Length: 626
Image 1: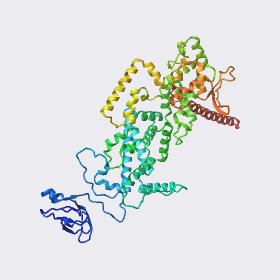
Image 2: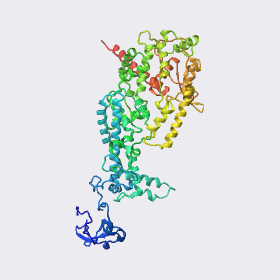
Image 3: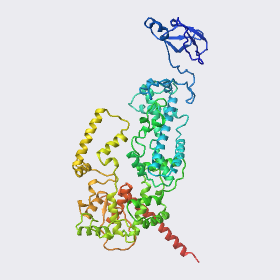
Image 4: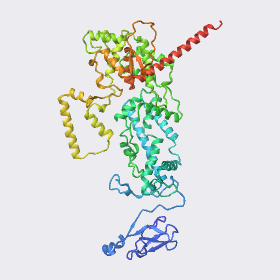
């Protein structure tokens, strides 16, 4: 049985004579078991060793009639040694079929069939790891887009936009460069030499040296080289780039999807990201034949990227692929915020759109600077300026009047016993005045829930840990039984006194927990102190200095706030009316109140400069001769 030089034993009955064709010179010859030297046969013409056929140390007397047939075993043909390195894209010998007794081969991978020879070539290993990584990220991106379209009603246009952006991003990253594997190994070796070249460190250990010119990669270096390639891939194409491409596609498609939405959905497991690696093997198959690293090692993110970094990463991708991005969809985002705060959209939004079209601040465009606040902060600033102009919020002491009226009425809150015309009802009629606006914002501030779904109770948190944080980890029967006992104990305890349990969940060892906006959970109760005193203490905790209401109004114009130097540091100053306005918008945008205040001051300075230039232009036109 000859197969293009591949040696196969041909038994001719008794005597144990086999026929082997030499792989080097092609000379056929017959051998007996006594001709083997150290278990291998050599060609009588060119002295080449036949590594494809091996004689084992078996005693024929122990096997009777099966002695001859069992004294030889066929091994996988070894990869021929060539004087020159074979390109990584060159065709390789077909691998032996895997054992089909199970659906998926199991570890250890040293028992994987013929593909084990491929792992000895660093370039071939790099090629397979690279293909698996890029294909896996593309599958994760596809699943994220499916969830956005099907669950969150995002337009299907984002799929086409994201696909184009993703292909360009992969091409711009140069991850498929032909010399990528050699560059990565050379850079790692240079880094190791630089590390051990410092005085007093010593010479480079033998285990960290990699010989790039070797044809075969030693097993002791194989695992290290795999993670060298993976580290390079994660730097060129980070796992969070799928979230950035999703947000970039939503931005281009003019969807009212914010970085806070992507961050929250990814962190809570509603958008496939943290546990998305469990779906890669189902869609791409088992990685053992194609990649030495499993899906958890390849696609498990270390953390969820923050809101500011997510927007900066999307802008960086757009800059790398040469996209000219538009500004945010101001109308859709502003309308969404006004609806969430229960404010009259028909009265506020047209005025805010005029300010937007007039000023066109640069903060409404995505920036690759991670230190710049997100674009929704600028949208909030425009809405705040619009509300101040429409409702004349300039330190007249409206909130102090509301707190005084509530205290005289004996209510526990500033809006508990107000007249019906002053209570927050979200009405869009003309009677919606400044007092109704401030009461509505105070009520909306308490109703805004910035906590995650998994933090509401212990059962939700345990389910979140099982499905998102530690997916794919099975428990034994005893562990499942113990978990069930603990859950029954927890349910029985919470059923007796749920209010006391919720109060206990808000604190840990007597210390109040902080919300995502930086405030204490227990510090938001209106009944803890009189209205204005509570506002004063809250402003002080957040770096603001309270200003009493203006007794003498020097002008009815717009009041510009400035930061004040107190004890050698700059402190934000403002009236209670203004603080009640910006704190609700800051909590909805999930940023600090001082950041929101700084954005408002920056917008006000820009508007003042525009007015000044317009005034100079009008004066110049009047001075021109007729």
